[in-house]
Length: 437
Image (cartoon, rainbow, N blue to C red; front, side):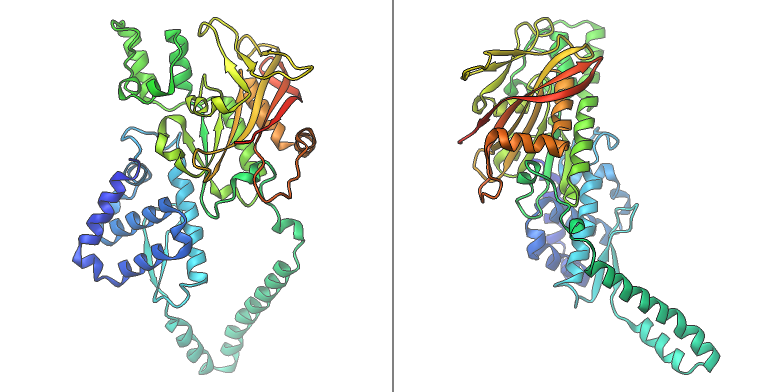
């Protein structure tokens, strides 16, 4: 399980009598028991691990890589360059700590801080003795010195009051800078993060090298992730080196980077709740609840196949690496085609297709937004399509939906883009479906 290492370290911390009697650890216990921290298990476990290591003086354990392995269950050889999830969660933790001490923790004897650029937990005494001493000293100072001390504080107070007035009378648009529909359907679980799962480029390349389709069940097997190819029992040394590299690195596509950048840009004040994960890090139990964005088709992101039977437009492929991919229209309507075939390969010019789909997770406790193209151009076009307000309005009209409804509206839309030398352009809606799970 992803949190196994962290659970073990937390139990150790709870069993330590020195730590249990420490007022600072007792503060950590109160913080993690507060309502806002109860909504996010990962943020809670992250704070407990960082505080426990800091209080024991084991600062060498508080690196981004070790936190990723201990708290999030990442493999020991994972790359912090490719995976920013630790940085994202620490940034969210800083915000939650500020919220706690500005609210219910205002009377706490200590303030817990995480200095920027570090992963240590600092406990600062909250008593204002220094301010009182400064005030006493100021009243006893000579008049000239007293004015020299009073003026800066007066200016500070004036600046503070001006800042409050500016904040109170700021334009309303700034306060409403949230993610637009349909992305807004994912920010419904209070402070829980939205996990954007990008494609596993290594998986796609392995399929092409082996010229064999791979099921999600095969993808999850340890032997497959260790670079062992059951269809090739006697690989050459060169093939072995290649498979070892592909199994030991996390790579994604340029299209996925464009989509992630687009989602972050249009999410406004909700962007801090977005966490980026590789398809290789996900496990079936993760889909039992929460909100997700899956980027890529089943040919690059095998998790999309987990929801494929609920979609009308399903990706099909003949011989891997030789046949052109297409979307099969399972239930064609008048005027629709049975097949929508895309580009022959990424980087060519012509028409490519993609689908944008919003579905519930298995138990209904969350939603999944799927952006999948037949080629990278289609996937990139899906992300760009959602960034345009005019396109989003056209999608609403095509679906005939009312966004004021209290329940999420589940749908899928097939879009077409004209690609020129690998760049998508002129995207339009081809067909839509309302989904009734």
